[in-house]
Image 1 (cartoon, helix red, strand yellow):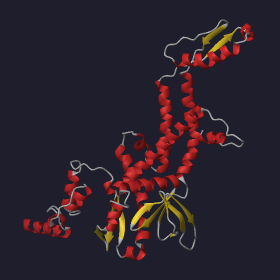
Image 2 (cartoon, helix red, strand yellow; image 1 turned 90 degrees about the vertical axis):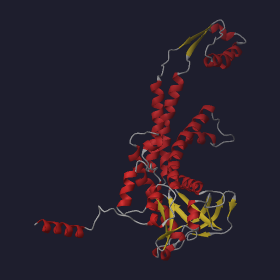
Image 3 (cartoon, rainbow, N blue to C red; image 1 turned 45 degrees about the horizontal axis):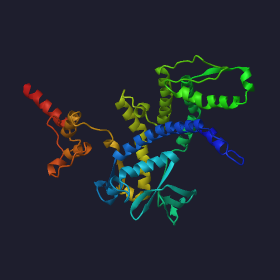
Image 4 (tube, rainbow, N blue to C red; image 1 turned 120 degrees about the vertical axis):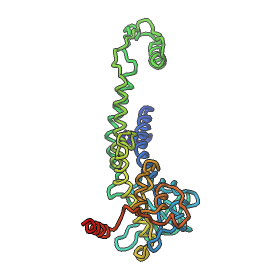
Length: 387
């Protein structure tokens, strides 16, 4: 639909070929259906990444310094971290690639750039533009963070698939619209055609009177002598028809979500088995994306030597899912009583403020846990005593 529209609009000749209002609004609705599905998927992923904590480490120990603040709070003076990642991931999924540059210790997502590729040397990036500002300098590949999503542009494949599928949606909408209209035949007496004002009267009825008659809830159609209008029986569509059209639109959301690696029920609002769907989305969509992001960040902002010394950034996706404290009370007890986590570790996961006391960082273990060798010795000693 969209391709044919622009083909006609910009066809060769002195004047562009006329495009009807109906074709324009068909294109308008097609675009919104596709964009709704696309943005729903991107928003889900961006919201998930925005909830992640970008943890910074120095010599293997977690620290909170300027780098931590940069990724978790304020990447630049005009964006918070959430807005920054929404902008980055929209660009990444729209174009299959995205560029982040640093200027004055602040990070910016490039809106456009020219990339010059090399094999044995770092790529070069020229004409890097952020908003209305274009950098005059050329960035080397080792100075920027260049993210590439897939070898194949998923968005381009989805657009091609949607071009074919949109024909079904357009046909369903037009069929429903036509079924709700009024159709009929107009019989004309041949003697009327010989009158002087025949064309004027006929055009007035066709262009004005019929339109008002069809659009009105209650109306009268004036006819001249020698004219006879007879309405044709038409098929009445039930509410099932609109559900069929809705199902076609939901199909667009489903295969868009599949292209992003997201279970369809998350995007289309189905509540059935949501927990399993969220786990699948995090495992096969968000976690791989987080790995790709942190690998490029560590590669460019830390480097090999610093990384091997324990200086790096790690994206913690554990905070994405909402946690109800009452629902996980038993699990929290086991984590603390087994010595796996301290109190502050658990409070951090739950999004609660940390306790600035030494005991909150200590690890505890209940008496139910014991060294297996000591336990066996105690059991043997009990047997001897009984004897």
